[in-house]
Amino acid sequence: MLTSTLRSEKFRTLFTLFVFAVAIRMLFLIVLTNNNAIETGRDAQGYFNRAMGFESILQSLLTGHSPALADLAKAYTSNWPPLPAFGLGVGFLLFGHSLFAARLIVVILSALTTPLVYLVTEKFADKKSALFAAVIFAVYPSFVHFSLRLYSETTFIFFIFLTFLWLGLTWQAKSVRQSVIFAAITGGLLGLTILARAIALVWIPVIGLAGGLGAIKFQRRLLAMGMVLAATIVTLIPWELTLFAVEGRVILVTRTADLSLYLGDYFKPQTPLLAKTGFGSTTVVPQLDNSDEDEKPRVENFVDVPKPVLQWARTVNADFTLYRYFLMLGYPPLSPTVVGLILAVTFIAFALFLIFAIWGLLIPAPVMRYRWLILALIALTMALYAVTHGQSRYAMSLLALLLPAAGHGLANIKSLFADTHRRWAVVAAVCTLVIGSLTAVGLPHEYSTVAASSYYVNLVRSIDAVLHQNTTVSDRLVLRAVGGGFLHPVNVSIVDDDYVFIDSADRSLNWEPLSNSSQLELAVQSETAVAPLQLRLSTRPTQAVVIDLRTAAWHVWRPTGIPGIEYLWLGSGAYRQTDLDDETPHF
Image (tube, rainbow, N blue to C red; front, side, top):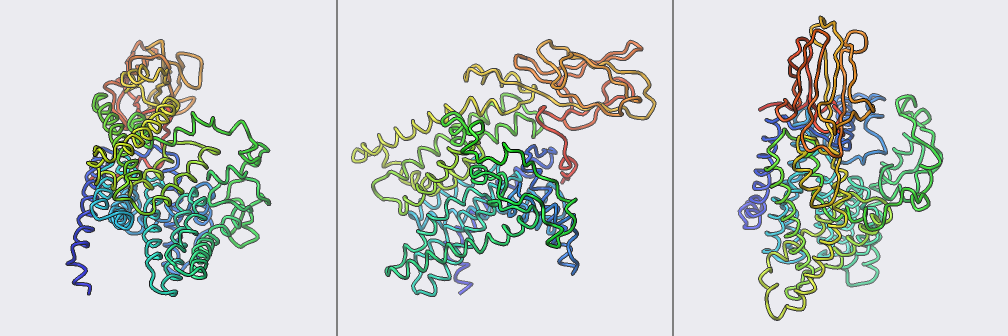
C-alpha cells in the first residue's frame, strides 16, 4: 500500500509542490544568509528569545533534569503566543542555536504548507484549482517573505490548512467513530491554530458548527460539533493554566492579542503566582503594567479605538511588512530603483490575487464548495480588527483564507470574459474596486509607519508625491573608540540642515570617549530631507571627516578616517541592535 501511494500521481504532485516551494525559499534563505540580512521585527526578537527558553527546557527534559526557573520564565509569557516559539526551540535542538536555524524551521514549515493548500483546495474545488492555489502560495511575494521571518504568520497558516484538511475528513467520515475521532483532531488542531495566533479564537463557533456538516442524523451532528469544541478547549487549557500560574491572571492566549485587548487586560488577580505554584521566585518574571488605562477594555478606552476606516483599512494590504523590511534596511542597501521595482511587483501581485480570489468566490459555474466557510471566517476576522487594531501583517491570515478561492479563480479565469458570466464579472469588478479603494485609504497611514532609512530618501520622496505624504526618514549609527588611546573630544554635527537628532534639539554634540563612554549611539531624522544623511566628525587637532550614507558600510564596524574612532551604521532609526545580529552564519 505504501509503495502504491508513493507511486501515485497525487503523491508525485504533492512532493513536487513541496520541493518547488523549498527551492524558492532556500534560494532566498541563502541570499539572506550570505548578505548577513538581519531581523528587524520586535515580535521576531520576542519569538527568538522565547525559543531559547523552550530550547533549554527541552534540553533539560531530554537529559532527565528539571527545567531551570529562568528558562521557564523566559519561555512562558503572555506577550507572545507559544506555538511559533516552541517550533523555533525544536529547530534550535535539531539544527543548532542560530538565526539561520530559526529561519530554516520557518522555511520548512512554509514549504510543508504548500501541499496542504493543494489538498484543501482540492476538497473545496478541483485538482486544477488546487494546483494553482498551491503555486500561488509558493510564489506570492508576502508568503515567501514571511517564510523567512520569525513572525507567527507561517506557523498560523500551516495550522489553518491542517485544520481545514481534517475538517474535510470529518465531513467524509463513514461511521460515528470516525466522525468523533476526526472531529476531535480538528478541534485539537484549531486549538493549536489559536496558540499560534489568538485571532482564531473568534473562529471557534464557525469551525465547531462546520464540524457537524457531514453527518446526516441530528444527534451525530451535535456529537461532532461538541467534540470539535471540547477538543479545542482541552488544547487551550494547559496554556491558560500556565499563564495563570506565571502571571496570576486569565489571559486569552496572549496579552497583546486583539481579543484580550478588546475585553480588557484586567482579569484578577494580577500578581504573579510563581512562588505559590512551584515555578520559582516571582523575581524572574517582570511585573506587568497595571495602570487604569491598560485595565479598561478597549471598547471603553476610546483613545485607543482605531479610526474605523483609516486604520481598519490597513489590514487589507498584507505587503507592507515586505516594504518595511527593505526600507528599514533589514537587507543590505540596494539600488533604490531595484527596491522600487520590488514594491511595484508586490502591488501588481496583490491586485492579481484579489481578482483571482473574488472571481473564485463569485464564479457561478463551477461553484466552489464551502464558500460560506471562507466568507464567515473572513467576516469574523475583519469584524474583530474593526473594533480592535489594524496592521498590515494581520492581512496575511485573510490572504491565506482566500487561497482556495484564488486558485479556483485563476483556474477558471477565462470564464470571467464569457458573455454568460458578464453580470458576475461586473460584480467581481465592483468588489475588486471596493477592496482596492480600502487599500488606497489605508495606504497613506500604513506608509507613514514604515520608518525608512534616509538611504532610500529619493524613493521615499517619490512615493510621498504620489500619496501626498511627508514621511520621516531616519538613521541610527554607533561610534566607538578603539585601542584605548584616543584622548580628544569629538564634535558630531549634521551636514544637512533638514536633519535633527531624535533625542536632542541641537544640531551638534560633543562626545568625550574616555570621560563619558567608549560608545555613542546616534539617531537622526528628517521630514523634509531629499538627500541621504551626512555626519561630520571633527576633533580639536583640526581633523574632520564626513560619513556619507550613500557610500557607508552597513552593519560592519568601519574606520571613520579619524584614528581610533570607528562607526557602525545600523539602518533606520527605528531599528535597535539585538542579540540576533551576531547569529547569522555564512555558508
